[in-house]
Image (tube, rainbow over all chains, first blue to last red):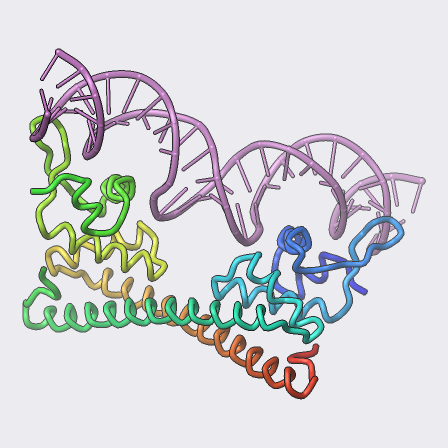
Length: 124
Length: 124
DNA sequence: CTAAAAGCTGACGTCGACGTCAGAGGCAAG
DNA sequence: CTTGCCTCTGACGTCGACGTCAGCTTTTAG
């Protein structure tokens, strides 16, 4: 059982973030006699999972909704449908990003070329 | 020359957003004698561009930095380097999203399977 | 034993992209 | 002329994921 500082260090997040996760119902902790939070080894993995989901742009609420599956493997049809919906949203966001990256690439390529040819990289 | 309400409708954004873009130096406007903003046709396209860049997760500052290229086709080596850096960041974000989508897919697949086999979709 | 380091619970601050409200002026129709 | 919609500026509100500070207790190192 480690305390919050160690978990923060090992998981690479701030102590404040861990308390926030608990506040949001994403992370649980036991308490010592004096009230300090105690976490098992698995918490490091759990925090990593939470971080990845945040990094993917999901909200606390979304994460809270999907984490139970990670915990007990139980998934209702509603939850499954919700997963699919989230997947769709993710897919669209990925499409947006790829589109923008491509446009950025085009600008880079065109401007590199104009650097040689003197032709503007883009015009309306 | 259209006024702000028409531009908002045609570009699919709020009037407030347009004023905000101007405030951030992303959009310019002429003014009528009475001080109302007037925009040319091209503004619709410009706002669309801004929206796409926002949708890709870029900040006002980033967009402000790169828009001059769209305007006049001039690009300095620094700007080009900055573009590449932004492209890198975009790339990493896409990677994150794809990773999360894959994990989501795995959960969906596993839980669908467990729906049939009774095996939990994931365990630590 | 004592001082530093770490934890605790509030609670307010931040940042970005707007929403929203207040109070006032502009503009075409009846 | 007035009704009603549009626009203006300025300024405060929002939401989410924490940062940060205050004031206090607990644990650890020397």
